[in-house]
Image (cartoon, rainbow, N blue to C red; front, top):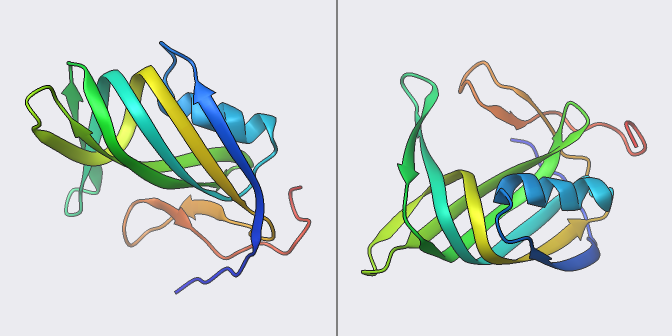
Amino acid sequence: MIIEESSPGRSFLARLDHGAEIIGQIADVARERRIRAAAISTVGALTRADLGFYDQTGQEYRVRAVEEPVEIASCTGNISLLEGEPFVHAHAVLADSSGRVLAGHLVRGTIFAAELFVQELAEANLHRAWDKQTGLKLWSDMQPQGVGR
């Protein structure tokens, strides 16, 4: 188990750009504001999306395209660092026009309209590295304060 204690840092609200790719845009916010660790929440709508499900046996994501407009009923996740760059890990619950719910790892999506809340974790040093047991890039041993800053 890895535990990293932190207190809240800065908070940000952002209206994301229509037509932009949502994961990339969230990473851009983190990069621009020099956010190293944060919790995120997003609401809004996407014109299309790709949702992933991790095949634990095959150790790979199975991605399904959602080629229709959907509401972001819930999207939560976090920001940490992978090889020194912001890495966004988000899961989304999306609803189509009939109310059918689709959910999973948000691989990418095209923004119709989206509002982002970011709660920075001031002292956290969350770094990701490849994990042999799962095949995922997970939080690894935390680096001391100031390393990579």
